[in-house]
Length: 177
Figure 1 (tube, one colour):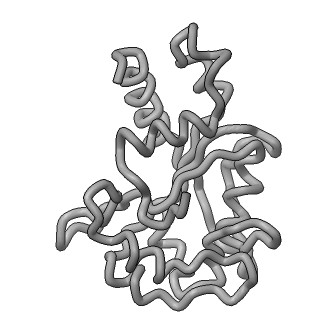
Figure 2: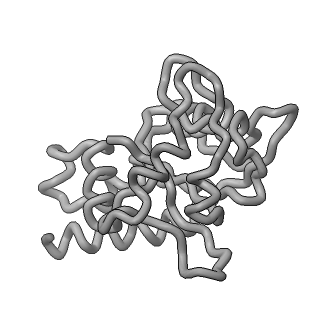
């Protein structure tokens, strides 16, 4: 990996860790208190401090497009390049899902509320609905473009940066593709 890309990925990690959203549930729907504006393009990460066993035993949401959290945890848990839980006894948060979107707040809400017509984690409809065990962070494409190596700006999409992040840091356990 080139020095420029490594530097970019380090900057993404710094921004991701600093860009935590304040989330709460209001009547079973996700509320984001400090959300980026609607139609903001960028990358997002969903974190948890649930154990791998808890993910494997999760009661899945019943809506049509809900991802099967327990199945994904069973299939991906323990694979070499998969992001998994922190050391035993730790309650640290770790990334279980990441993605890119042209509407960050809308897509994040989909993963919690159950986006109809789109694959989503449907967290608030699953057995893992306690938001005390969740964190969400994001980085906007506008900020990323300012950090990209100049020759790469015209060639790279937000989705490609998402894939490069996964190649560098590991595959989040609840991501399918």
